[in-house]
Image (cartoon, rainbow, N blue to C red; front, side, top):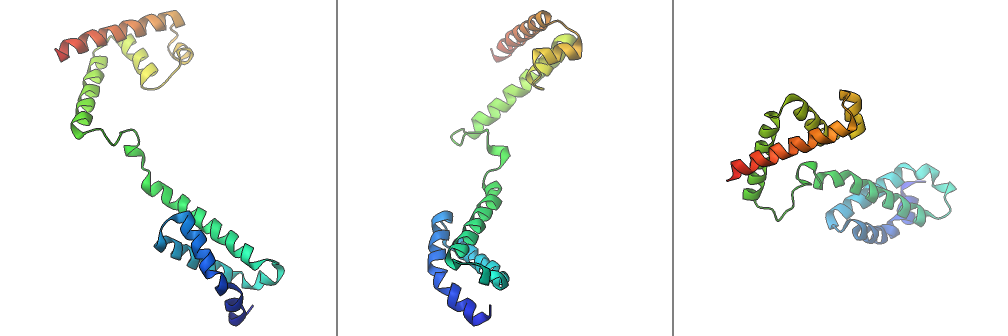
Length: 164
């Protein structure tokens, strides 16, 4: 397909392609960019166009795929992991207070007896199940529950003393 026939076939689709891209992306500049990328891909496939029955549908499919690629690519730019757990309504003072409390709890855990500290860390920080803790430490499931209960009670009591 030469330049003139390419223009005759695909340029009439420009407005329709733009409207579809805009509907998907909701942004004029990005829609224009994706339409241009679509025309580039169509131009690069111009030698294969004689095998395609419906050039309009082919152009729309390429456009749609370009839009989806763009959305996938930019998705991570807007959704970062570091702020996913913090609600937007939470104030800076509240976040600082929660961080201070977490440090205090970690310090209290560090002061626990070795066995209680080990089981507590495996259960709550490492996310181990009771069975996994049993396999790693050799402590029976009943003893694991008792150790966790005592550790939690000690931390709770010491935390209340600190907060008073």
